[in-house]
Image (cartoon, rainbow, N blue to C red; front, top):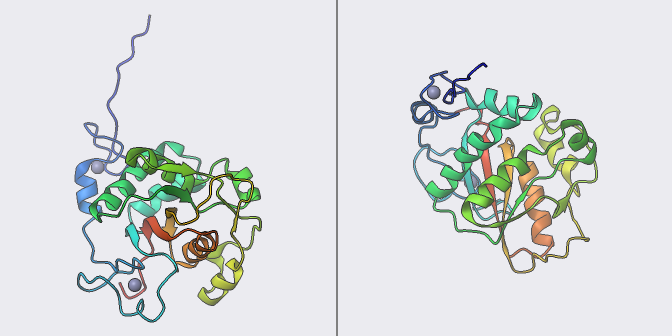
Length: 231
Ligand SMILES: [Zn+2]
Ligand SMILES: [Zn+2]
């Protein structure tokens, strides 16, 4: 009879054995506190409630929480999670988002939703990475969550392949409220989750669609934020 040792977790970054999926040393080292605009999530030089751009062109979401920089090691971990089928990355990455939301003191929403994938992309990947984060964070916070409150009927081009101006027009009308869901968002506070925020176009469009569906307030919760070129 072969007996097996129960090995403890190995940190996905430094490979230390006495660790969880992400050890506290790596989290402290690679997720330093960064000053960000509370409204749009952009990095700011000092801690201010709002960046210079937001007063003139505020996004349709009320606040943005989360957003470690999309850089080592988070870029690699997220790519594994998203493109290489490493679904076991979902729990430790969701923990990063949960910690950030709680650190920001974000108010608890009635619903936590995820930026949807187009049906073809969902079929190819087998899961929506944003929903895998959203449902775990919602469960930890005791909020309701719904994977299908928003639909994304059109596949569109990969956002990453488009210039900034094209991203917004590519997304216009990309999200529609799912009329078959009986739950109404009328007058409710909703948080919408995505894994990576680059230009912010996707979350802006999703938030705008939720506002059109009656949500009184939409917050954006993102795991990682692509740093601006100047950062
Ligand atoms: Zn580590
Ligand atoms: Zn801002």
